[in-house]
Length: 134
Image (cartoon, rainbow, N blue to C red):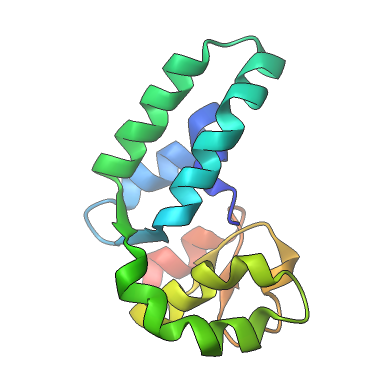
């Protein structure tokens, strides 16, 4: 799953990108990515010696202010083609590909599993190249 949520919760770079482009771009994610991030917060927060509740609060703010969280009922119709596109890598990433297909949008991720899926991918280092032209 794309990790920019966790990078936004525990860092500053992703937050600054989300804030800067919030009026000119829509950042979308399948609901399972937010759930997945929420599951990983306690472990990461403990390793960074920060209160998990504070980190969960940041995630809640991100999800409500900057992200359009797409319910499975919307991207579900793209499950079959998404699974076909990601099956050689990590099949559990199909919701991300399905959401990208639904919205006809690229994927912001550091995960190389999405390469070759037929959906454009951008990393945090390069996402602003895309956003400037969006």
